[in-house]
Image 1 (tube, helix red, strand yellow):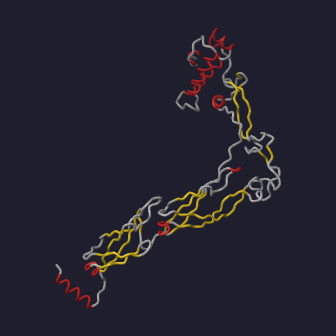
Image 2 (image 1 turned 90 degrees about the vertical axis):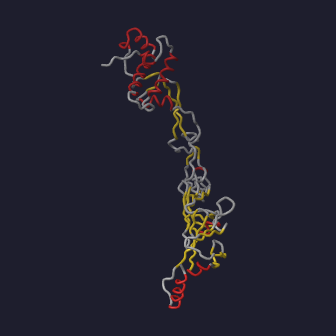
Image 3 (image 1 turned 90 degrees about the horizontal axis):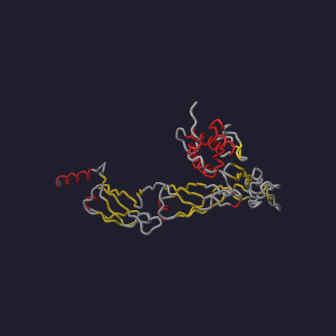
Length: 352
């Protein structure tokens, strides 16, 4: 068998140490080596050794015997023994006695309502300039018959006799470290603090019902695909008057037949026949709002880019807006009439 260390050495105190010094040393080391707190190898063994040393030195008779004849004078095992009226069944109990004390007497805080989500599809123009959309959302609301009380009409919930309306049960426990209050949720009212003897027939005492509600969603100018709006308090109602959850609206911007978007800028591809690209022209360009004229210079090549300032998407929650970029695409004819072919043949003779 391994040789036991001196109990005073285990606790790190002198043989003249008083009860308070021994208790203080034990509490400090017990916290350091408790297996729920210290996962190092050997911590549990040190914790048991500390418990055994303290069990002996904290008892006046056992300490006296130990001082006279050593370990043979200390009888009994630590676990399962009674110390000043506190019984510990394992490592977890002493840790609870250390840190599990509570003195709260208030009722359990009611829980906030659940958040909800909804998805809306909008056009590029609606994303750029904002819009209003009416949606129908199913959500949990307070019962219209009992206004959320859960009790039948003309009746009221009654104070729970088990916890006297506190929603919690408090039991005082005595331990080697003093008196501790163990607070648990009242099993009868489940933390509500009140009981319902005559439940509302419509909601069966829950105080809630499912309804479909129409909500107007205001979409700000400048939103983009996958943007998300938060409507505070438009989710499910909470318990016992607690705040309602929020409604999160996700936006899906549909593809546009003419434009593509990058940030707050939009892009448009302008097709030009070879004659207009060569000679230059004035083209009518569609924008998000209307149409505008754009001068195309002679000799325009495929890929050449022109810019219309401030014709893009307005900046979200800010001033100004993006631009519109026009990319030229020179289109070569695939078929020609006899006359067109002769013209191109004559032209080809004059070109380098």
